[in-house]
Image (tube, rainbow, N blue to C red; front, top):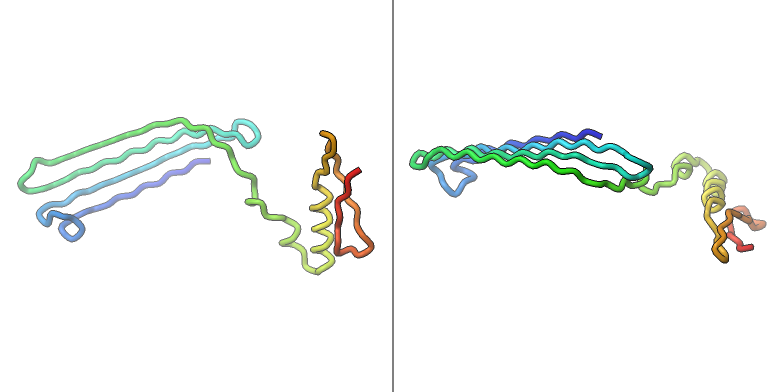
Length: 132
């Protein structure tokens, strides 16, 4: 993923504590993130900030700061936890069917062993998980 942003601020007599000069401040960032394995990624980021100040009774001031850094990133899951089939379900029966599929994916663990199983009651609206 590539992300680039930039900001520029012009500060003059109206927004400054001094009404006799002005400042131009710019800031830019650029980052590149690449997935390494599964949900693990690394990111490279560059940040630059510059300040150019003009005051009639002071010498011109120019400041510049640049930063590079490398970071580890743990990526989140897609969809932010949303359930795909519920959004597409039109009828009450479709929503129940979706809920049953979601519950069927739940793990039931006993004595360190996990199995996937689902049992529906006589009423299709209720889905129960049972342990072996």
